[in-house]
Amino acid sequence: MSLSVAASTQSLSAEVVFDLLQRVRQKTPRVHTITNAVAQTFTANVLLAIGAVPSMTISSEEVAGFASSSDALLVNLGTLDSARREAIPIAIEAARAAGRPVSVDPVFVNRSPVRCAYARELMAFKPELVRLNEPELAALCPQRSDVEALIGSGTVLAVTGAEDKIESQGEDFRLQNGHPLLARVTATGCAGGAVLAAFASLESDIALAAAAGLSVFNIAGEMAAERAGGPGSLVPELLDALYTMTSRDVEIRLKSV
Picture 1: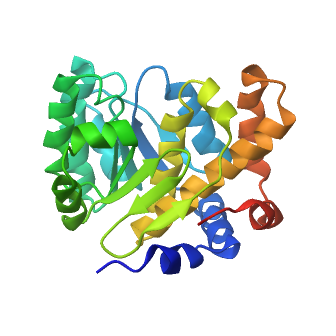
Picture 2: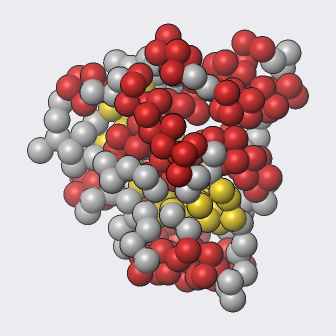
């Protein structure tokens, strides 16, 4: 049975969040990312800014080697072309064989029945983490029983929105960091998903890793928005905020319910 939301969320202290960020900075985990064409460069730069090492190949001939030698795999369905369709199951199977955590970001499954059907097929691999928003969750899991079955299989759900929700078998978190300006820059959500994958590579408690990763990314978004003049300057400010974030930044900004 899950801990209460209040009890779980209270355990997410600023110290815990910053400790996980520091572990990423010190361990430099490799994250193989099969993501959409719009998000590749930004996602790679976000991973580098937190201290992780990205790789991005979608070649079916190479992807198994990259996935198995990385510390985590992220699968993002934002541009689900034939090359990615072929590479994704190969990468997941290689990551599984190597004991690496798999994260899935089923972008816009609420807009495409074909993509939604494909995402449901991926759920059979029992990914450790699925990051999505409320409309995507409603499409992927139309009934509450579908959500419970997915969580029951061991998958942690990170549902983003005005209030972020982490749901799992053991812990549930409610988080309230972030800034509206993040929604004015393409691929911020996709890049944020890569941060969660990096955190999950170093923390076996995937729910805790997801909560900490979301908190770090969204706190960086707040810091960046305060310095930026608009969407154009948000991107460099966001990268700098992720790179320079201190324990004090987390302590004064961490918001949870």
